[in-house]
Image (cartoon, rainbow, N blue to C red; front, side, top):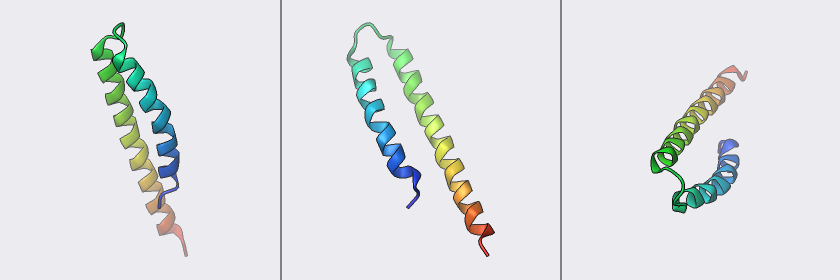
Length: 63
């Protein structure tokens, strides 16, 4: 298993709680909330892609 998976889960828990509070707050613009969620998802996908590429590169360089 990729070692970043538990770290990703630990990061997602507080971010989910913060997102829930922001979503239920009436003073927050909904478009701003959805933009932050989209940004988090895109950055998460980039991180997963980089991790996967680094794992494959490490496997390829083993003797």
